[in-house]
Length: 188
Image 1 (cartoon, rainbow, N blue to C red):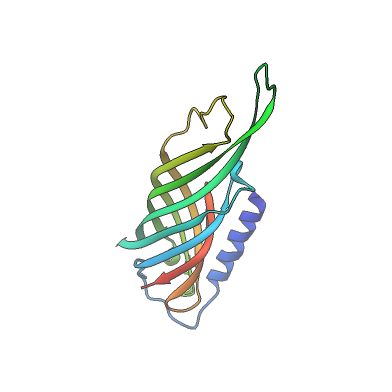
Image 2: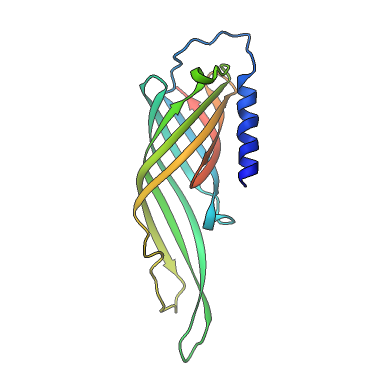
């Protein structure tokens, strides 16, 4: 997975550094962008349902930096074996829906990389809370604690790129330590 990610990032950066006939004026404004995306999760979430409703809206804060309130939703399912003397080792499962809410801070490297006007490159961090709701299969009376160390704090690190198809729309790829997304950016 790391090799694919590294290759993709290098490919996107190479495309962004190609010369452009249009002169770029720095600092470019990055705010007033609505990002809508879907993606896949890492670690124990691989193979689970795609996240839906990954939404954020970026506000320009200062040169090359934006803040974006966000909300997302994804679910995963786990299976357990549990038993007692009457029903040894029965198979049970639970489904958990997670809704992260918070703010994402992004720093854009276009000026540093001298990227052409069709591309934006950024690094970001997200901070917020993850609200979880689990539903267990009926008849399961074992341990219902999902993770004894689970915290409601939501932290995520990102690197990403956006390709501007038009002045008002773009496609973005956001690789992160939690849920990576691909989606549409609408510029206002």
